Length: 188
Ligand code: URA
Image (tube, rainbow, N blue to C red; front, side, top):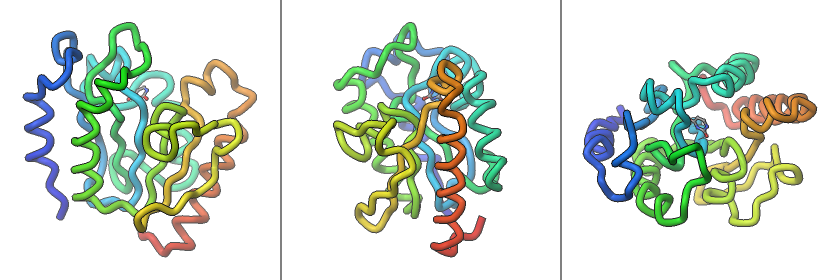
């Protein structure tokens, strides 16, 4: 059984970057720590900061639709977290020093969970986790093998709300994910 309580407690007390001064809640993550599929977004927004859970705004509702469409559920068979655990003011992009301050928590989570697949939700997560020049428009839905894990980047739901023409492409990524889950024999 994966137990995140130690990392979670460290996050709750974290003052490693200035974002702790403006946060309402630390947004640690949600889901099943024993899951083999980890979703990583960018950073909490306003709703997430207020509620302490990732992806709970309009974008989160869209993400849930895609997840549920391929048999995934944030409460039972995946885990969802972000590159940052505290909200950047006005939802600006995470700064490099904030990423560096928060990444050790993600690394520890990955080490404990040992996910088979990491899905990077949006450009920022994909550039941090897959490659620094990752282009979502070109590389979405592609699985990269790294250290015994498969890494895949897809569209951020906020980007889909701005440009709904990419919604079909995004759902295709989720269908590829579903195929990969079956091919790897991951029980969900
Ligand atoms: N956007 C993200 O990347 N993560 C969240 O938790 C909410 C919005």
